[in-house]
Every structure is written in structure tokens, then in C-alpha cells.
Length: 179
Image (cartoon, rainbow, N blue to C red):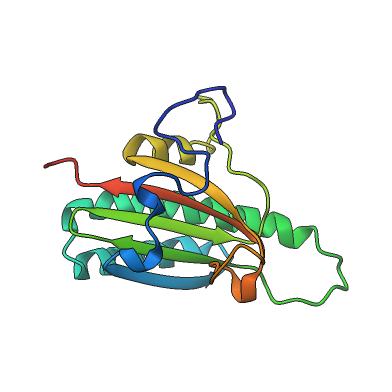
């Protein structure tokens, strides 16, 4: 979601509309990784992504996909921490986690990151004095498209959360710019 009124066609607000809407089984290459929602999850996700993209033979996309993963996982960890902080102190529950899903073909990669927070992603207007808050702006700049969709327990087959847990998925499509 863009907070400054920018209606860029590159930023999809509809659930998985367009080419990135292909069903998971339509992508020939797939990887999934669940991580505890801790700050160290970001570097783990980046390393996993680097190795998977290399294995898939998509080295020309590696740096961009790693950047996208870093930004989306960072946001998911922050959103999960906020959701966990809203829990009653005596309420039982496992520590929050995030899930990274990577899909690939011969010339593109789709990154999806799930977290249990219903809060929508917001691309902030640039603030030159701020030391953070530019992640989605970077994602928008380097991806062909990005967007999000909510996940509900009744959303159909196998949402990314555990046992159909609600939350959201933020996604970005990275395509090789050369024909």
C-alpha cells in the first residue's frame, strides 16, 4: 500500500493479480523457509536466498532478489514483533515466525514473505533525516511489481501460515531486464 497517494501501476494492491498470480505449482522452482521472527532472520533469509538463486542458475537476479528478501523479511520481523507485543503476558503461544517463499523460472523470481500481522505494508514518503523506512521504496524501485494480500484460515488451500493461521503475504516479482 502506498501512503503518499502514488498510484504507480507497478504496485499491485489486488491479491496476486497479473503474471505473479500463477499458482505455486505453475512455477517450476520453489523453496520455502520458516524463521523465528528475530533480527537474525534477515541474514538467514538472505543467505538461503543467495544459495537457492545460485542453485537455480539465476545469478543475474541474485543481488536484486537478496535485496528484496532483506527488505521484506525485515518488515515481516518488525510486524511480527508488534503482533507478539499485543499478546497478553499470560497468553500461551509459540514465538512468532515468518515464512519466506521463493518461486523461480528461467528469467524471473517471485518472493513472498508471510507474517502473522494483519497490518498492511506502507511505502513511506522519503524522509532524508530518517535512518529507516525506505524498504518498500527500494522494493518498488528494483522489482517489476510488488503487492500484498491477506491470508485468512478460509482462504483456500495451504496458505503460507501454520495450519491456516491468518496474516498477510507481501510479494515482489523480480524479472531479468534483458530479453
